[in-house]
Length: 598
Figure (spheres, rainbow, N blue to C red):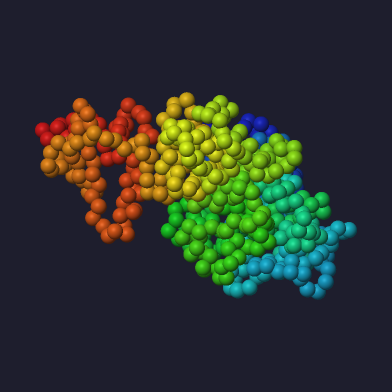
């Protein structure tokens, strides 16, 4: 059945070019023929016609007749290898290629390499799913990754499909920080297939660091981030899904490359059900949403699992041990991650700026983790802006320039007493008037929000004796409409985090001279009673939360009150009810009560 023109995909018109004349108009993949003497350009024209001419061609490509499936695969790969085609057309070809490969368990014939031999009688190493052999492709030493195939016929088919998936993903990648893919062989280890890549003498990053402890770890972090950024920038994005030290190889020029794409997936095809999450990925590097069976994963943030793994890999690189090395078994690690625990900070190795970045990568919410592009910028500009390189200084500078503030946000209420790089350094000097002391604290708070990345990740370190003054300073910043949006957002996050940790709100939110007018509430809901009251000469509504719970649960209720007060306090809109102070709102609700009574 022909698809109406209005429903055809809007591929660029430049894709309507052909390497030869169409034999006829094609309406479906079942129409493809492989006639004797059919020229290569005519076969290519048939595939081009279908990719251009039918809606969502990857949905029906598995209808391709078996006798022509290899030809179709080869043509689709040819189209992908032609960089002159528009991205939209290439994306459609990639989706068709993936769908057909998955359905038939095959890869394009152009991926198969001849003249490959193996060296030795035994593999040099092995992993959970494959053995690694040394081999030779003509005059070059290569790595042969041979997937193990054991079990039932269904399991063997599954392994073959996973092999094809890895080969297809890897074949499309071209980047300095991604290990090159050479091809596949089905002859060397028949009936098992093997993936062929360059042999890397230096091995993986962790073994290299053990042998060369003075290697520049910071440069490695930049290179890993660049490789990850490349994967996530593709259309559709590719999720590596197993970033860790063992899967980062060190090339002859000491450049780090991401390797092992056995678990890699195109972001749009990720299965989000809980049964598939826990079986794939290395537990100690695995993001909490892929461990917790009750977690809900937003497809828009599936690349965030790589970000979490990257943060864990930074810890691994600076300690030489896997994350949670002090926990011996994997189930205990899973429980720790679900409970909110994260790898310990390595001592004497990470500066505050880098650790703040790591903690941002390890945050529980995928949507709040920085993306790969942001990480790459933070690290790269650390090198760019600091002549005598101090990683901490570079991170602070980038945070000031890019993550938190615009240049217009460098205002201050007074001179800084010293350079601060941690909330623990805030102090209230004795002997000063309250006004001067508060101005001093506000200046220190401004300094920290400007100069450290993700300041809300460490604001809980604020000393208890100054917590109220810090909250008040943050609220003052939020009340200043001249503050740039990025700076205000950082202040809001800091205030929310500190209030939640200390069960408190800024003192400026509390109101005096409030009285209640009657002996009984005028209304009630599921969790609160509503009273009439008066603030000076204005009638107000008093919302009083009921606290009927054990003493140990009262702290939770208090946190919820603080959360509601903080959120409401920041809202300013004609169609949002104004907030005056904790449990106090204006006469708008009073009028509603009168109307509701008749």
